[in-house]
Length: 103
Length: 282
Image (cartoon, rainbow over all chains, first blue to last red; front, side, top):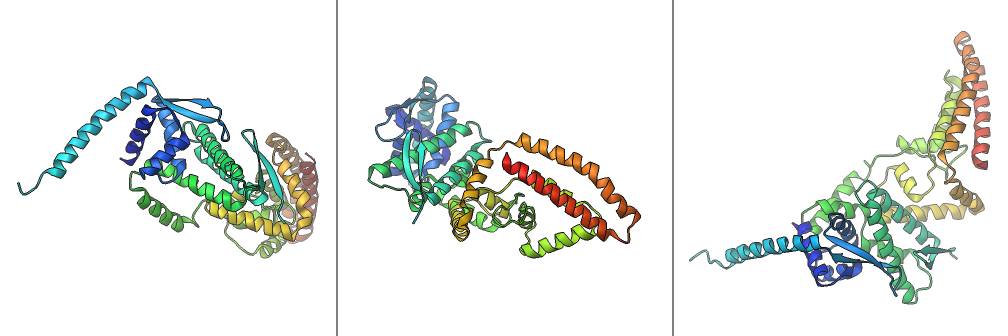
């Protein structure tokens, strides 16, 4: 569940704009989703190998070159599927939470 | 006073303390090793290395002249222990919970980690074989083992000296802190690596005259294995030619194995020394 959530969040982040790993980490940390940075790298590599995301190297003014990840077409499709299931999930949870058992 | 090393990570030079450098090297090697079986593992390790370089760069920009071991520890903690990285992926539990669980598990299994046979180059008389074997079998008193082995060489009608030489050639030398932890069957974590490196340096300090030798050993590490295997074959051929002569007296003069045992031992020790010289000159 956590892992799936993380993947979903990464894809959501990349949908907005291409980002490199430290950006992603920073934003995920704000959401308390990630414990140690290193967890992210296997995940990114897996998403990349599944063809959902791609990357390009970019020179950085702040240290070594960075990999900027972006969403591929396949990733966009996958994301819309995830969006759909998230909406469904949200709906269900909301119904369950808001239904007063006494009524 | 501390020795300083310049390292180059993706084109930038960082000045780093010797112990910090060792810890970093060990960590990266461990990451590479751990992910090597995984799909795209090389890439993951490379990404992590890039990230470390970037964090070092931040420190450098902030005016830190020399990176010390505490800085490296902080960075490695931020990135996570190698176990955490591969385990977290498969656990679906709450992270904190799974972390404490693995911590517990690690604590229990600390002594159960599989040992690997290495030659202990830091406590050796000849090749460090016995010293390495003692860790392998979980024995402690090295002097006792040495005495027992020599006694056994002189009395037991087996070419133990030959066995020693073969093991000398086959067993790799424990050169890094990681090797030493594996040799002792201890868990590899940034903390344990750091401790091992500290211990190493203490020993280095005690025998500071050996510094040059250590450098040589680092270079020797790259000496390729095929050469060693050829040498092994030569020694085996030698031994096959020699052993029958040595062991025939055992069979025919069983009541007096002492004399021929001594000869076997001495000749084989001599052979061992020859091999040692050859390996060193590689």
